[in-house]
Amino acid sequence: MTVYGARLSNSFHGEWELYVITDLKSYDDWPEHSFGAGPIPTLQERADALAQLGFVLADDAGWEWQESPTGVMDRVELLASANVRRKDGAA
Image (cartoon, rainbow, N blue to C red; front, side, top):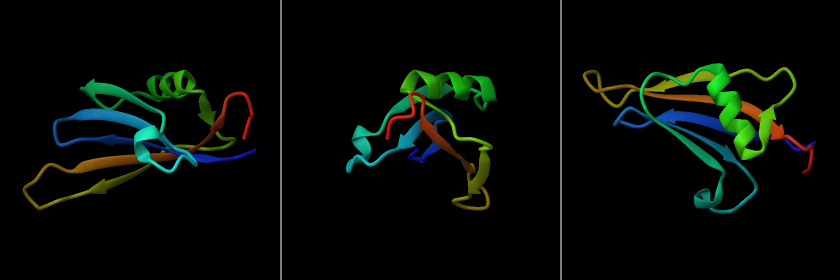
C-alpha cells in the first residue's frame, strides 16, 4: 500500500486548502480541495474532503501541525500534515 502526504494550509487571505502530494511530477496535478476562508476545517470536514479526492487517513495517522511565522508582527501561516492512502487501496 502506497502512503502519500496530505497537507492542509492557510493562505495569507485566510483561505484553507487541502492537497495530496502524489507521484505526479507537477504540483498543479495534485488532488486538491479548497475550503475557502473561515475557521480551521474540522477533522470530519478534512476526512470528507479527502474522501472526495479518493483518499483516507492511513492506519494510525493523525494530523501534525506546524506554524510558519514570516515576521513577529505578521500573520502566522499554519500547515498540517497527515499520511493518507487511496480509498480503494490502489497504488
